[in-house]
Image (tube, rainbow, N blue to C red; front, side, top):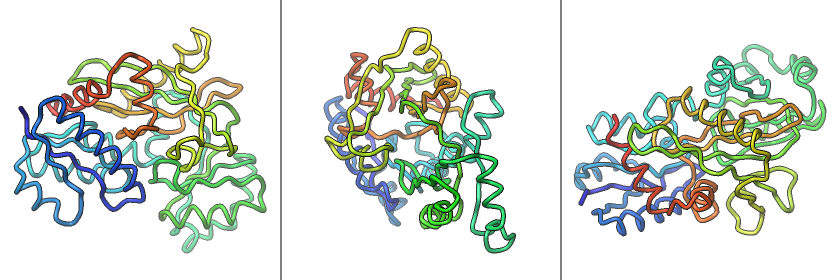
Length: 313
């Protein structure tokens, strides 16, 4: 029996999702026979960890502080092994600009983009270049915070006139925003799972089909009944293999561990990567558990394999 601290909650905008993920993980760990300590992460985290004296931490945090390498670095300082990807991988995955540069440098497809920040607007006059950006990337544009997950803060600008309002809205979530060429196509997600140092297993591909909204936003992700999920996605064999190959390559480029989810758009020119999530959701509506179930992998086995990644550092 291992004493496992489940880190959940936190203070990011994805707190509620994290609490739901953490609760499911706790139940699974208990069924697996572990001694579980639930920790709602806050300013007293170090004190809680020292009092709990866990042998390992299962990181079920999403968003800032938990998915961006911050808590991972703290756990390393405290000498506590932890599940999932390490500091370097989390930093690059959580920062969409760094992730896209890694993808592009590694020869993987990702939509063209430009990153704008408050400093550029206030000190460099970037607002005067918005027309040039629009001309370069074309419309519609996807406008999203550089460091948010779960589609939080994602806005769409159908024209040059809509771009300033979309930028202002996205900037309310963080100091930098990513303007990305919109690719029309099917929303696909490939979840990957690996115990220890074993090669990553690409689970069945999930296609998300929102019912009421044109785009797959935060509500469509987590409110039951807002989205239809097709798993396995209906793809011919060669195309499905290509999608999984790209996902495994993205996993390797970002040096992910334990589990991750690669989100893609399947457009007219083939699959292209939008982002990599180093700590994907584990809620009842999350995509990784759906994909695992389609592969015949129970939720308890998912948790066991992710926990095993803590021994690889």
